[in-house]
Length: 323
Image 1 (cartoon, rainbow, N blue to C red):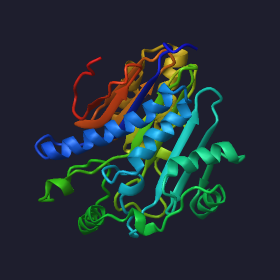
Image 2 (tube, rainbow, N blue to C red):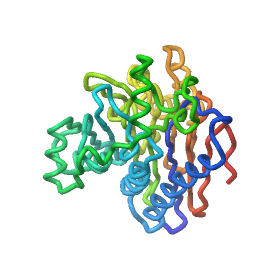
Image 3 (cartoon, rainbow, N blue to C red):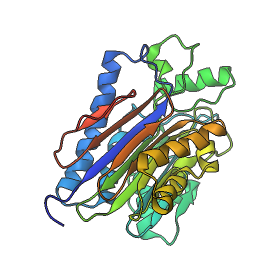
């Protein structure tokens, strides 16, 4: 390990039908600023010699604390009018992992997922059990009203009226206001530290108008999150049910490790498999040499990356990273 060892952070803020004509310059600037804050937070950890795990947590916490994304403060409402959050994290060096699902009072679910990994004998805790554990670990507990935003509540009412379940960034042509039309997304991060270790994490509020304790791919190791120093770190966003059925994150990592498929190609193969069963979305990937990919088969994906030079790059629509 030297000061010149590669470091890299890649993040996403959700993929979906993000329409250019509905994304005003002001709102795009707000998203890019939020993504930049996440990248800066994670990069500060890596640049100081911190771990990839801590960088992933810092990057995701920044997005969980922003109302722009469907995670933490910006989480969507379930059919019952609750904000039910989930998150997972994985260490590529040890393949240890932690996850929480169906939580309503933990300010930063990604911190709770990490606590499950480090402080318990389990991989996943759900509902009240996860909340009790988080409180015992002295994580920040908030009243469920903390997660309430009028924008998300209005989305729920429209979804109920139309008997629809809305995914991240789904377009709703019947909604007259552009800022209501944009469905803000699941967040995730993958990081490489100076020691050559990978980590991945994902956090979400799930689906607007979801029912009956639904859990998506974001809290499922191998579906929405996976990290293995022998291959790649992966975080996913999109139609959660399809990503679970395709075991998307593990599937992608296995292609890289066992078939030696280039990471961007592996991501595209997985996304094609998901499309074949009726889903869409995006994947971010990173290997221990610092190679990375941000792939999606939707109109757009909020995403960004930062490396040794400390210059943050952010994108929404298909465009090339300027390195």
